[in-house]
Length: 327
Image (cartoon, rainbow, N blue to C red; front, side, top):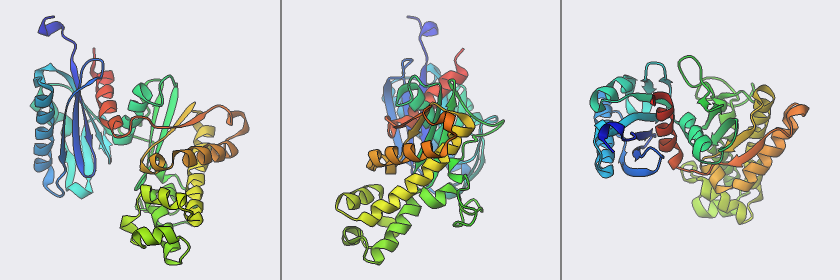
């Protein structure tokens, strides 16, 4: 097969808070190369673009292909992006503002690029290759440090004119609740994120109500991870289970309202909390969502666990680039 007729390769770039992951896929989205680097805080836009460049170059070298072989590059970024212009608007922890990433990638690698929210491309990956296969309308909910959300409708990422529009973590659950980082009170993140759960679990440990958790890590909020919460529940810390179940119920209320509003057929739950306690989250979220949703829609949806794990972001970004750029 001549070079002109050879199917293109696609590169997916997952830009997380502490890591950069680039993966190269063939036309059937089988991985053929990868490169991972740590991000470097507050290095400025030029330093960030240089590290992105070197990470992608490393993945191309691992795949043994040239940039001229690429059909396009897809990027998932955990923050506000202008999808229309391909600009990362702000990355506070990295010192980036108004990074013209699409323009840079096109210049450096000679191919088109698409920039999207990381949860959006992760949900798209699950829709194409994971738990959401065969669905018409998928909503993803990913509780972690915050709570991310994404949506794919009939094969397209659901979005606003310029940007992602599924900020599920900032649905207001309690107007008299805790202050959120977005400036509002009572957002879902303040009630049901891992950080919110860990804060309540630390209080319980300090009160002597979670002896296993206290014995393992004390009340240091930074040490209370998803796996530790799951282990505490398994070891009999009933109050920790109550805290986690209450958080899952809050997510279920939000999901039920989304079902009433949008009528998706599949809800995908992912992230570290769900991976550590999949049955608890699926059962509680599904039950509460059915109670919350309008009665005609209560049996119209399924709640399932994400399948792809850390692969979803890069794979989804590459596949979304192919969807947007392929002729």
